[in-house]
Image: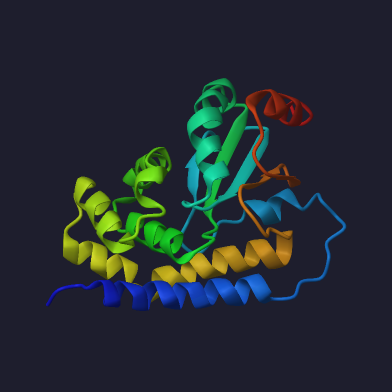
Length: 214
């Protein structure tokens, strides 16, 4: 049995319906832009990607989408220096959570979750570094399958991951909670000890933001 483009579209259409429902769902305006850090720090059902010490005085949470250009810019241009300056020195604990904006991003996250847990951060970095090669490909299944094989996944493992309802529900729950409780509607969106920061920022801007909490 082969896994055709039609089969992949069934999965991505289902994910897209979830995304459309999310996009249209009404939400009360949130005037408050600072939230309870303990609530923001609660992990999603699939677990979080975490860098840094639990003892760090600052917890920084990012909601990110694999097909978001600004997310890729943050991950490739800013995060390496931010990690060296703040995370590796014990000042910041960084948490990344999935917030897929479209069906391809959803499938990309689902495929990554098929890898061993300790390889998932490496996978996410690779996906952002190569975003232009796969994110808007006319044949999304073929593009993702190629990456999956590079990561050591078989075709069967990729197929199982991107059709896994439990994974889809976990991603959806994480995204919906971010939207409904914390007002996240786009990516990248950050929370620094509960303080909401929306959009791409250069390292110099993060120096100022993080400095207020250190």
